Image (cartoon, rainbow, N blue to C red; front, side, top):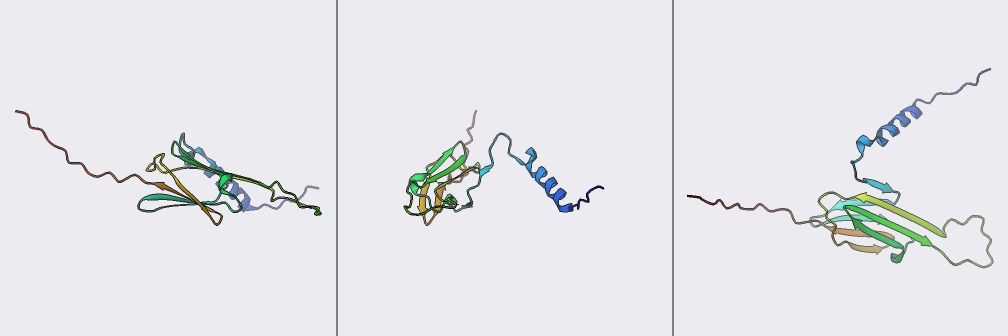
Length: 144
């Protein structure tokens, strides 16, 4: 006798939506848009693009920040070398951790100096925005 399999209509819808958003139509050609699992907030002030990343438990020397060709890269790697005597571990998951994120920055941001601050497990990056272009008066030359 055949097994009865219950059909879940939401599973096929979910799979279809996943395929749709994985389609290259939604990606920027030739550019990495977003990669990694590090949670970030990105906002803009009058003078800076501000990126805040959650990196609890990481020290500043365990984090690498790089801006190159319009792509912001944040990498963190944490290792714990000490071992407690007299304890037997059933599970040990906190001794090592690595996070990373690569984000294509908006075209208005150049590869500029980035101000970085680590406070309370939050890495805050401030990337200066270029001054807005001002209109230029064009001089007209008269020829006789």
